[in-house]
Length: 158
Image (tube, rainbow, N blue to C red; front, side, top):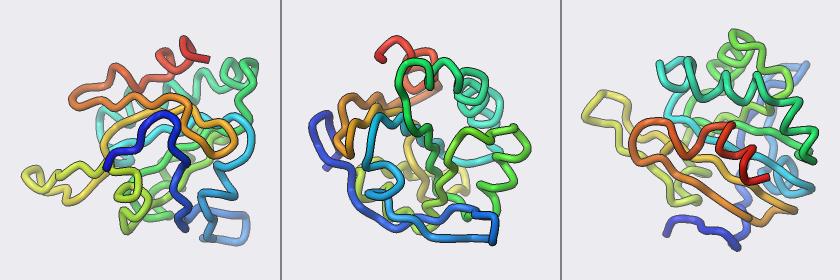
């Protein structure tokens, strides 16, 4: 079942890069306190994700923070090394990059994208959510293109 407004975020172990190398983090710890903007992309370094989706959040992180956002996080079904390199390539220093390499969080969210026809395997659908203290307050899922899950759309909702 797809997660909806009013539902708690699933608590899953993900990976993120730390100063000491790859580390694990539970979503309850990383995303469960305060106001969080969580967005997901089908894949790091893919055209739409690299040219539109991530850059919008990077460029507007200060505006998100000014609206009370405590954490800006991005999740993708990629490994921690790819997520780290992607973040560095885009200057995403203010964004928590979460690697969902086994798609466990994506499955728990009910937002799996079958990209096997394009040789991508199982990925995450593109979405953006506003989460308050671990509970989804709003979520917008793009079924095609990048419209509902943009940073500009999230800013309108905050």
